Length: 283
Image 1: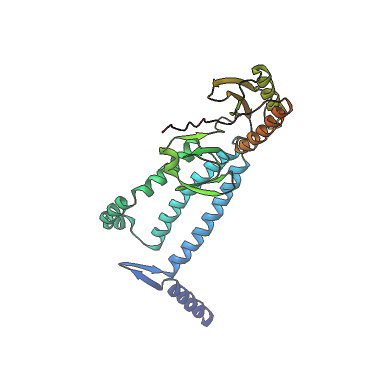
Image 2: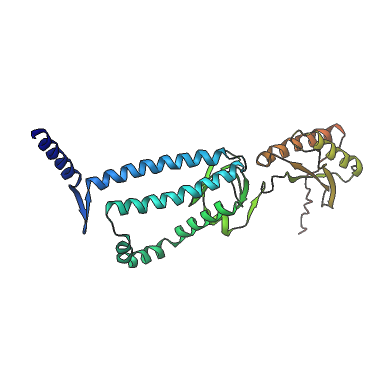
């Protein structure tokens, strides 16, 4: 009998400890049992999120960019559920909280409406996949590879290896060029002017030959050359070509310019510089 009574006493003491109030917020009393339940619930939820991530990234029907978008959407959705459920476990009446803070939420909403716009834009970007992780984009004359898309911001890596964090509204409201949207090569051009005494056909042949010799330039579609205009002091040409590695296209253009210059030198073709004739006014 003594052992039974001792066990009952221990059970009562444990129950009393779990029911003990740690602190109060208004009319809500936060019990130790509720805190422990929230901790266990959050740990299990985080494990579930990790399992979902593994399942999504193991999928063979989605590419890596779409896997990222699907996982992020599921993750943020579950985080909202976790937060709401945790508050309910702790004993908060969410309806009362929302009703009591309605005026405050309106004031805050007016003050941080741009922030909410960023969050909305982030959801839109993740859903419609117009911009994906790994895409090469150009916005406000900034060219970079998308490294990470979050609800509020998108991180890109520029060609000079700088990380830039852009608000998502900048991607949805401004004109944006996605160089890799269709997973196709993009066309670029290099322009050059030559002396009026140059043989036009020879110049065009040299430009095309130089483009074909550049390793980064695709042979199909085949590069082509245009005689663009008669300039003030030069005949102007442009060579057009396609590159798959859009992010490093400027390197290909630089190498192509070097090759063109060397071939022009070998063939005695001059690249003129602008000339101005100064006349001194007579007194």
